[in-house]
Length: 196
Image (cartoon, rainbow, N blue to C red; front, top):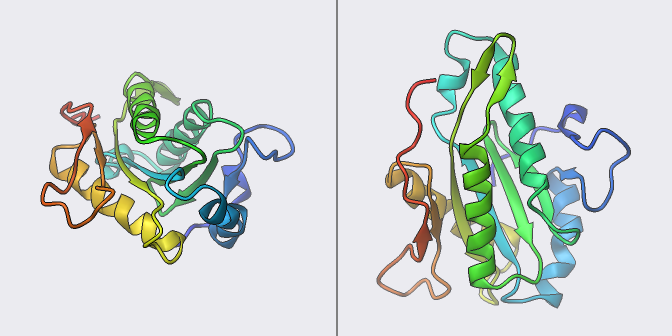
């Protein structure tokens, strides 16, 4: 797992953190989600949401442009989630979403809603309107996963397939990793946004 950078600026709810509106970080997220693996096996999904070509956001701008995009990404992603779901920031341009008691089609639908919402988003930064797209990797928590890191690794592999497809799309890791067709089903095959 990429190390999460703890920062109070990641709270996007505008008030005291709540179970349905918190960006969980590192060990806090693991503690929050540990019971899911025992209670909802095969019904917990991990989504990794990655901003396509994130470096272009900062080119010719300062770091506040990237911060503004990440804040809006987190805020809009939170609005697609239910109370039992959890959201965490990974790395510089990535969010992890954990869906509790979901089914495969529901998880893909959630991932596609996030992708579509961000594709339509305009982020106000100074006198500019910034636009980005995201790629999403989806994986289900299986009995073979020894810990949350293992399901995150599967989601990372699916995310890599989405990036390889050009970005701005969703890819799912197989429930049975021995299957020959590794990354399907998929949705949202759209070309990622070009220069900003």
